[in-house]
Amino acid sequence: MTDLLVNIDVADLERAIAFYRDGLGLSVARRFGAGAAELVGASSRVYLLQNAEGSPPLPTEPAIRRSYARHWTPVHLDFVVDDIDVATRRACAAGARLERPVSDTAWGRIAALADPFGHGFCLLSFNAAGYDAIATWTVASAPPPAR
Image (cartoon, rainbow, N blue to C red):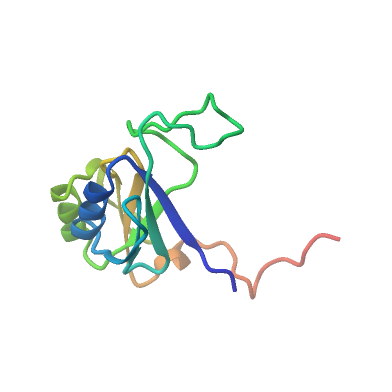
Protein backbone atom coordinates (compact mmCIF):
# COMPACT_ATOMS: atom_id res chain seq x y z
CA MET A 1 0.00 0.00 0.00
CA THR A 2 1.12 3.52 -0.69
CA ASP A 3 1.11 6.13 2.05
CA LEU A 4 -0.49 9.46 1.23
CA LEU A 5 1.20 12.55 2.65
CA VAL A 6 -0.60 15.87 2.33
CA ASN A 7 1.59 18.96 1.85
CA ILE A 8 0.10 22.42 2.27
CA ASP A 9 2.04 25.59 1.51
CA VAL A 10 1.37 28.41 3.96
CA ALA A 11 2.74 31.92 4.36
CA ASP A 12 2.84 31.80 8.18
CA LEU A 13 3.65 28.46 9.82
CA GLU A 14 2.56 29.39 13.35
CA ARG A 15 -0.76 30.77 12.13
CA ALA A 16 -1.30 27.63 10.04
CA ILE A 17 -0.51 25.33 12.96
CA ALA A 18 -3.01 27.23 15.11
CA PHE A 19 -5.70 26.97 12.43
CA TYR A 20 -5.29 23.25 11.71
CA ARG A 21 -5.03 22.52 15.46
CA ASP A 22 -7.88 24.70 16.72
CA GLY A 23 -10.08 24.54 13.63
CA LEU A 24 -9.72 20.93 12.55
CA GLY A 25 -8.37 19.10 15.59
CA LEU A 26 -4.96 18.11 14.23
CA SER A 27 -1.86 18.19 16.41
CA VAL A 28 1.85 18.74 15.80
CA ALA A 29 3.84 15.51 15.80
CA ARG A 30 7.18 16.91 14.64
CA ARG A 31 8.81 20.13 13.56
CA PHE A 32 11.39 20.42 10.82
CA GLY A 33 13.26 23.58 11.71
CA ALA A 34 11.46 26.90 11.50
CA GLY A 35 9.74 26.20 8.18
CA ALA A 36 7.77 22.98 8.40
CA ALA A 37 5.61 20.91 10.73
CA GLU A 38 4.02 17.48 10.58
CA LEU A 39 0.43 17.26 11.81
CA VAL A 40 -1.39 14.11 12.83
CA GLY A 41 -4.96 13.31 13.74
CA ALA A 42 -6.35 12.61 10.26
CA SER A 43 -6.07 9.44 8.18
CA SER A 44 -3.01 10.94 6.45
CA ARG A 45 -0.21 13.03 7.87
CA VAL A 46 -0.40 16.70 6.94
CA TYR A 47 2.77 18.73 6.37
CA LEU A 48 2.60 22.49 6.64
CA LEU A 49 5.39 24.08 4.59
CA GLN A 50 6.16 27.75 5.05
CA ASN A 51 6.74 29.45 1.71
CA ALA A 52 6.56 33.18 1.09
CA GLU A 53 3.73 34.78 -0.85
CA GLY A 54 4.95 35.41 -4.40
CA SER A 55 7.75 32.85 -4.30
CA PRO A 56 8.09 30.46 -7.26
CA PRO A 57 7.00 26.90 -6.40
CA LEU A 58 9.02 25.38 -9.25
CA PRO A 59 12.46 26.39 -10.51
CA THR A 60 11.39 25.29 -14.01
CA GLU A 61 8.35 27.62 -14.00
CA PRO A 62 9.57 30.96 -12.63
CA ALA A 63 6.50 32.80 -13.95
CA ILE A 64 4.24 30.83 -11.60
CA ARG A 65 4.05 32.42 -8.14
CA ARG A 66 2.47 31.31 -4.88
CA SER A 67 -0.66 33.19 -3.93
CA TYR A 68 -2.51 32.89 -0.66
CA ALA A 69 -5.54 34.79 -1.89
CA ARG A 70 -8.55 32.51 -2.31
CA HIS A 71 -7.72 30.23 -5.21
CA TRP A 72 -9.20 27.18 -6.85
CA THR A 73 -7.50 23.91 -7.61
CA PRO A 74 -9.00 20.62 -8.78
CA VAL A 75 -7.53 18.93 -5.68
CA HIS A 76 -8.94 19.72 -2.26
CA LEU A 77 -9.22 18.05 1.14
CA ASP A 78 -12.39 16.66 2.70
CA PHE A 79 -12.43 16.27 6.47
CA VAL A 80 -14.98 13.71 7.68
CA VAL A 81 -16.52 14.76 10.99
CA ASP A 82 -19.16 13.39 13.34
CA ASP A 83 -21.06 16.64 13.93
CA ILE A 84 -20.79 18.96 10.95
CA ASP A 85 -22.53 21.88 12.63
CA VAL A 86 -20.06 21.86 15.54
CA ALA A 87 -17.10 21.29 13.19
CA THR A 88 -18.16 24.17 10.92
CA ARG A 89 -18.47 26.58 13.84
CA ARG A 90 -15.09 25.42 15.19
CA ALA A 91 -13.33 25.87 11.83
CA CYS A 92 -14.86 29.33 11.32
CA ALA A 93 -13.92 30.41 14.85
CA ALA A 94 -10.31 29.42 14.04
CA GLY A 95 -10.23 31.50 10.86
CA ALA A 96 -11.89 29.49 8.07
CA ARG A 97 -14.19 31.25 5.65
CA LEU A 98 -17.56 29.55 5.10
CA GLU A 99 -18.22 29.49 1.36
CA ARG A 100 -21.19 27.14 1.21
CA PRO A 101 -23.24 26.58 4.36
CA VAL A 102 -24.03 23.10 5.60
CA SER A 103 -26.45 21.37 3.24
CA ASP A 104 -28.04 17.94 3.08
CA THR A 105 -27.31 15.34 0.41
CA ALA A 106 -28.41 11.76 -0.20
CA TRP A 107 -25.20 10.53 1.48
CA GLY A 108 -25.02 12.98 4.40
CA ARG A 109 -24.13 16.64 4.90
CA ILE A 110 -21.45 18.94 3.47
CA ALA A 111 -20.03 22.43 4.04
CA ALA A 112 -17.45 24.16 1.83
CA LEU A 113 -14.83 26.42 3.42
CA ALA A 114 -11.43 28.00 2.80
CA ASP A 115 -8.53 28.04 5.24
CA PRO A 116 -6.74 31.31 6.10
CA PHE A 117 -4.31 30.70 3.21
CA GLY A 118 -6.92 30.43 0.46
CA HIS A 119 -7.00 26.62 0.26
CA GLY A 120 -10.51 25.23 -0.17
CA PHE A 121 -11.69 22.25 1.85
CA CYS A 122 -14.95 20.58 2.76
CA LEU A 123 -16.38 19.16 5.93
CA LEU A 124 -18.44 16.00 5.44
CA SER A 125 -20.71 14.10 7.76
CA PHE A 126 -21.97 10.78 6.41
CA ASN A 127 -25.39 9.30 7.16
CA ALA A 128 -25.81 5.53 7.65
CA ALA A 129 -25.74 4.84 3.89
CA GLY A 130 -22.80 7.15 3.15
CA TYR A 131 -21.64 7.12 -0.45
CA ASP A 132 -23.49 3.82 -0.97
CA ALA A 133 -26.59 6.01 -1.31
CA ILE A 134 -25.27 7.29 -4.66
CA ALA A 135 -22.91 4.52 -5.82
CA THR A 136 -23.84 3.07 -9.20
CA TRP A 137 -21.53 0.09 -8.86
CA THR A 138 -19.06 -1.50 -6.48
CA VAL A 139 -15.85 -3.41 -7.09
CA ALA A 140 -17.83 -6.65 -6.71
CA SER A 141 -20.43 -5.59 -9.29
CA ALA A 142 -18.17 -3.61 -11.63
CA PRO A 143 -18.27 -4.40 -15.31
CA PRO A 144 -15.31 -6.39 -16.60
CA PRO A 145 -12.41 -4.31 -17.94
CA ALA A 146 -12.45 -3.55 -21.67
CA ARG A 147 -10.18 -5.73 -23.79
